[in-house]
Length: 270
Image 1 (cartoon, rainbow, N blue to C red):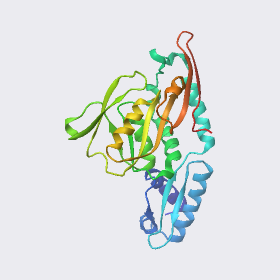
Image 2 (cartoon, rainbow, N blue to C red; image 1 turned 135 degrees about the vertical axis):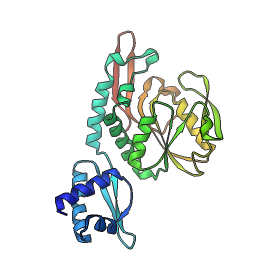
Image 3 (cartoon, rainbow, N blue to C red; image 1 turned 90 degrees about the vertical axis):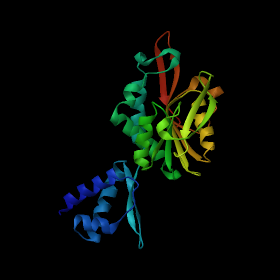
Image 4 (cartoon, rainbow, N blue to C red; image 1 turned 180 degrees about the vertical axis):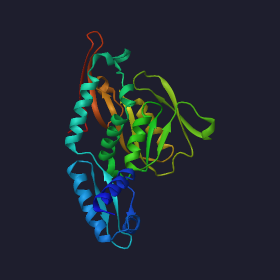
């Protein structure tokens, strides 16, 4: 196989299998070439990945030596994407009753969701995450996007138990925005004790829902290593019950009467 063909095949493998450790003999057999040629090919791919701000190849030596693609998003790419996202969200036609914004179209855009997933996965890649947790329903596409780059499963917290999921653990929590007592449940088989969890959600006001998820995960003795939210509202910062989190954008000064919105970069860009 020509080098140009090998480069395409290898690049496709790494993109389709992020964070998967693969030993060099696998590539030697797959591409019918030598270990030295594979090593040179990987030097080229790694250089391009890094120059384009897409990630890097992590190589290990020894008997179990191999390579793994670590997806990342550069700070410059993050800033460009978040700036575009802010402009999208500042459209006054997005204003909904209660100061919320219509974001379903963005959460339904595969390219947009994939890039959000890449950014969060890049921010949390050093945390040895075992599973991504979200609450039904709007956070689900974001959670799957993040999990695809971290190569981990997704667990969905629901408001009501499902017969098909077996016995569940449930808790009551106080919603941060409505101050109402609500319920959330998680099947007992969803998590194992000591799992490192990343919580992903689409929108956070006071943080009552995320705080509820944290309390639910305590019942499983899980470790919450990170919390990522697409958008946060700063009108309830004084009453916020979640402190350690990462946001992409911050929504402020939502004026329903004058139909104006201010959207800024979240705390990811610092």
